[in-house]
Length: 220
Image (tube, rainbow, N blue to C red; front, top):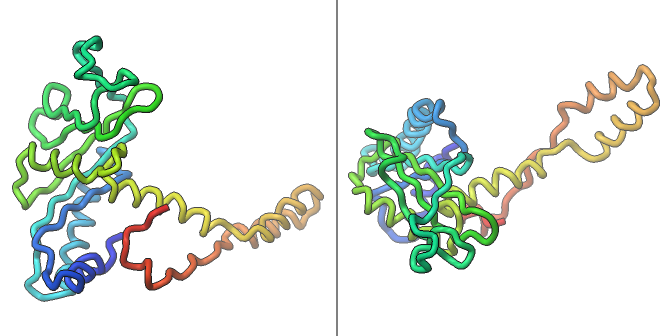
């Protein structure tokens, strides 16, 4: 979901300047969905910008970040202490953009965090759209530098994932409804089916957000 111009409006009010560039990191997209998501969400970004001002069309870079893969990176010489951290993993900030990457598309692996236990899993970044004409080194450096606390993926995508995960707890059916369903099921009576059907679609509405947190990154 693209909020209707709200991020750009906040930046406009705060700095007095409209953003000239938008760097959009997107999580939770499989390779088979890349261009479907790109077409839908890039169009939503365009419409959101146009809603602020008729001719306002900032340059957009659209990047998908994936963490669910089986690629692992290792130092060429594991005994060289300058190439590994205390746990034996590759150093934070390590980038791979050749050999194991796509031969024609713009993608790279970035390990932006230190592994505490086990083998570090790098994030896989796919640049689907780039009007800002980033060089490979430029976008890799920007992405790594956004990970100010040495986290595994770029923080805007990281916190969007956490916010989406946390939202499920606000949308679960009311506990009283689930309790009545369970008790009816245990009794084995004919009312269990009707009770389940009545309560199955009952979902609490999302709580209203305070104005002080509406326009800031959601931390949880």
